[in-house]
Amino acid sequence: MSLEVALPIVIPLLTGTLCVMFWRSNLAQRILSILGSSALLAASIWLLVSVYQQGHVVMFMGNWDAPYGITLVGDMLSAIMVLLTGMMALAIAVYSLASASPAHEKFGYYPLMHLLLAGVAGSFLTGDLFNLYVWFEVMLIASFALLILGGERAQMEGAVKYVTLNLLSSAIFLSAIGLTYGVVGSLNMADIAVKFGEAENPGLVDVIAVMFLVAFGIKAAAFPLFFWLPASYHTGPVAVSALFAGLLTKVGVYALFRVFTLIFNENPEFTHQLLLWIAAGTMLTGVLGAAAQFEFRRILSFHIVSQIGYMLLGLALFTPLALIGGVFYIMHHIIVKTNLFLISGITHRLLGTYDLKKLGGIYKSRPFLSLLFLIPALSLAGIPPLSGFFAKFVIIRASIEAEAWVVTFIALLVGLLTLYSMIKIWAEAFWKKLPDGTDGASLERGRTSGSLMLMYAPVIALAACTVFIGLNGQPIYAMAEFSATQLLDPSQYIEAVLGGRP
Amino acid sequence: MEPLLAIAVGLLYAAAIYMMLRRSIVKLVIGLMLLSNAANLLIFTSAGVTAGAPPLIAEGATIPDGVIADPLPQALILTAIVIAFGVLAFAVVLIHRAYNILHTDNLDQMKDTDT
Image (tube, rainbow over the protein chains, first blue to last red):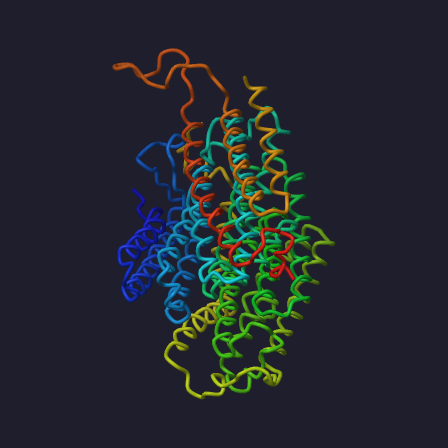
């Protein structure tokens, strides 16, 4: 029994259920939410340590041997992702204490949040394709409900696009699963990997690969199917936006990493070449979209898209160094992006708007908050010595080594344009004088209230993580390297799941 | 049997995509419904249609007697139907709320969050 693989799924499910049982008491739900996310973080650390020692941690549900039953598999990549889920869960839970309105809490904010976390952790840990689909849907239905909490006009419009595109992607994913089952008669990923390797009809395998690419590409907001993301992420409550920004698209990226290293690794000239151009398009369109925006959270949403491009670039180059870079980039990105959304929530609390034209004067009255913004913002742009520099450095070095000059140029250019966007936010929201029409009363008040302290705490913690990764990158790099080694040698994964049987 | 089912799957996908491309939000949801049914029928067809006995093993035996039907695709489809039902229930409520708040069912007029 390897309990640690199941715990990151069970804990949020249990927390969510308990929150439903205490439906009438907001206080009990808040306490449960904090306890649940702390337990999730602890369980994810346990999983990481266990994976570090054993390589792969496998658990067979209901004691049905693979490939017949559902398996949960924890390798280094999933352990890292689950750890980040735990960190974000705790950060958002603390932040929500101050940011979630009582009306939202009454409509099931906490149960939905933990259901979402269960879906995310389940997607990271499952070793079964159909089970992955089920976890995706668990995650989606929770995210649908979270996104429309409040029921404002923009939320409805955003939700229609979000729901449609995600259901379309699910349908494509389901069709791809059906075709896969038709070809190999199995749903266990390790088993599929073995049988696709011996498939008689490689053309059909390529078709299925492209279907998975489209399905996960929509979820990951990759070019050209990313339009739903900037249209919807900025509409929800800010803590929800931050949670989505950190985790949801990364589930799509994780699924791409998993499927295109384990299952579709036979024909990289076709599949990974395709991924390379998708990555380039994603980086470029995302950053150019952001340049045109003047709303805090919309700029950040477009930057999610452009950063997804870097991660896909790591996967597409498919060299050891590139995969290390990709995994490192995911780690850095989740922390930084969530943090930027949380900061946008604080500025909204202070000035009541997300519109950069109406924001201003924050540096003058809140220099510490401005410093907290600069850390993730400069890290996102890739300024040394922060975490983003090393993430970008590894990926760009890998693309130079692979002699992919065009993509290297695009990656460097996008770094520069990211800096431009961050400087725009800095100049507009923090540096310039407070514009006339905006009410700056809560900004001027010298003291920081208790609820604002709760919003600051996770921001400070995540900024500290960014600085830590920047100044002490070696252990993080070693984790990414460990995970890249496992990803490039799928036989370890297959061996761990199928136990050496053919 | 398979060619007939394959044609039905193709028609369902085509109808679903056509409905999703219409401007009306109600037709969009009808398209989503057809799409999930098309995917379910695809699983059923691609897994192979066998005219076999129910997958039951006689008492005392370790392997089934004769040709049996594969029960797994049906389990998958059942799960997918339940999920699609839940999600579509949400989608129907969503378009109702969206219509009440936005006072339009035309997707072309829902562009506020795009620009």
